[in-house]
Image (cartoon, rainbow, N blue to C red; front, side):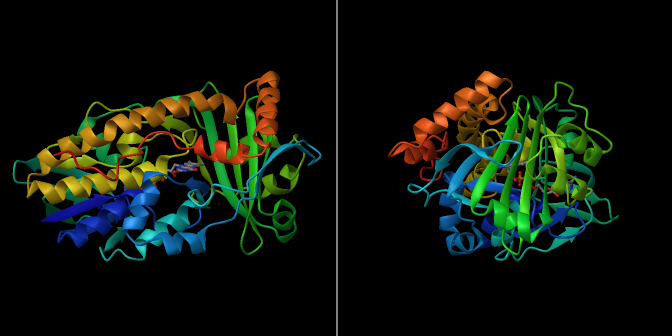
Amino acid sequence: MRALICGAGIAGLTLAWHLERAGWEVEMVERAAAFRDGGYMIDFYGPGLQVADRMGSRPRLMEARYPVNELSYVDGAGRRTSHLTLTSGLEEVVSLLRGDLARAIADDVRAPIVYGATVESLEQDADGVSVRLTDGTSRDVDLLVGADGTHSRVRGLVFGDVTPRYLGHQVAAYTVADEKLSRQVGTRYQMLTKPGLMAGAYALRGGRLALLFLRREPDPALSDDPAAALARHFGHLGWILPEVLPRCPNPPELYYDQVTQVEMERWHRGRVVLAGDACQAVSLFAGHGASMAMAGAWILADELAAARGDVPGAAVRYQARMAPAIGEVQRFGRRFVEWMAPSSRWRIAARDLLFRLAALPGGDRLFVSSLSPGGHNLITSRPG
Ligand SMILES: Cc1cc2nc3c(=O)[nH]c(=O)nc-3n(C[C@H](O)[C@H](O)[C@H](O)COP(=O)(O)OP(=O)(O)OC[C@H]3O[C@@H](n4cnc5c(N)ncnc54)[C@H](O)[C@@H]3O)c2cc1C
């Protein structure tokens, strides 16, 4: 059986890992010119970590992880306004760069990756899918997977326009090299919030700093000049921002996008199946997307293994197992919007108060356990 996976990200690589071990001939096509390292910091936990354990990847994740000993909010002068010291219950939350998670999976994937290309067009019948790539080559496969993220090209070709649900925010993330600021921020996740604005920083190894910017914006249209837009909205807020904003890179080093969730009635048509953010994006507010992308890829591989060649049947069962958990995580994400990026001063004050309560004995454990909505039993049971 042959599979072509469009998108060598978290879902695509996880699926390739499992399919090739089940005897499939797998190839991947990736739009980026080279492997996408770096990116933004993610908290990785829940069903994705269970999948990583089954793949034997945990030692690599532990090498790549960053310790986060404290979450703190600061004011424009860099003074801490509230904080939460994280001392316990953290073994099951791995903080690392998205690129490092992808690398940990990719290191054990043998499938060739065609970089700098995507799917140009496709045709399918009951026996297979003929795919034409933008590099002019063609493939005949038994399965085409669109694991190409929230703006999925495969989804567009098969389902036409699907408008993701816009959660009223735009997000930007990049890393800068700065020994001094990296030391200053240390093993804390520091954030500064003003109504509708959130900037966060975390120190990386090698004197680097990971930065995240979140802005409430009713208009989903993205700026043509993201660096200028970031400087305009965040440049006057103080803290480390005047030093890091002028060093904002251009895409692809800069991640800049709308915050969205993808909701679809069907994740598959015949032998074309979507995976990860392409069909189930939960958004950064849910904090669970990479984990759910790995869980979905594992379940798809699990169903394909049981289906003995019946790709459409496996796709139906994969969605049936995965979609309820995704709905739950997406609902959680929508409820979390106001806490991560409070829209008013009283919400900022309420959040600070909650942080102070969580700082009481045992509060950090409670805080960490509240991160894990949905998907608890995804990786253990295959319905008969
Ligand atoms: C700022 C931010 C913070 C986040 N924090 C967390 C967190 O704390 N915890 C968590 O679990 N998740 C988090 N997420 C979500 C998580 O990163 C995603 O849900 C996860 O990466 C989805 O995996 P994926 O494989 O579907 O997509 P991706 O990992 O994005 O991979 C998609 C791949 O497809 C490629 N591609 C795109 N278009 C095409 C095309 N047309 N043709 C070929 N290839 C294409 C891309 O280059 C990429 O390599 C966060 C996301 C963001 C933006």
